[in-house]
Length: 228
Image 1: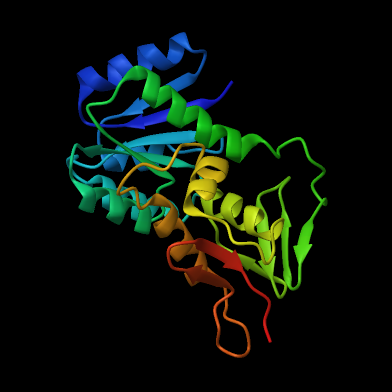
Image 2 (image 1 turned 180 degrees about the vertical axis):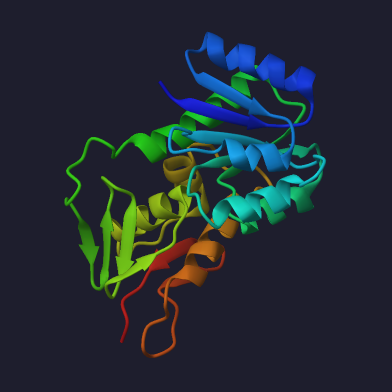
């Protein structure tokens, strides 16, 4: 049974979401500002619903501090039409975003999609690694290494890296990455895939020749390339 933490200062909405999620057999806890939300995070939390506009600490500052310690998936709740909120949230390490107002059905679909990609590998042996060149992933414990150094990846970045590793040298379109990694169809003007790839690229050291490991093919997609 997954544990969802709701961090939102809208008490009425939080209570409604708690009721909806509890009906779907989720364990739910709530916090009504960023500071108390940060203090409510523990190893038992599987996913966080995080509002942008809150007192004390807004959602962005809360997410920034959260990512200094935790890799737990975060679904940002943003104002409808505020694209900048979505972009900033993704840059700071959010796994996905959901504009308000949203339907219960869409919320549940987004939550389940995130949990599927973060919990799929929990039953795998802890030392069952996936290796390509100098990169090794351990899906059973969500750890990634490059040249023996641990990479600080979010759960979505890890899932994205895993997808690249099992398709080396293949062009992966944004449509494929959105569906297979994010668990949703690519919508018009949706920049989630681009932002996650950008964040992942920043965390991977370049090849000795200075070229990035993930190449962008304009109008086609991305691919994991070998160094010279």
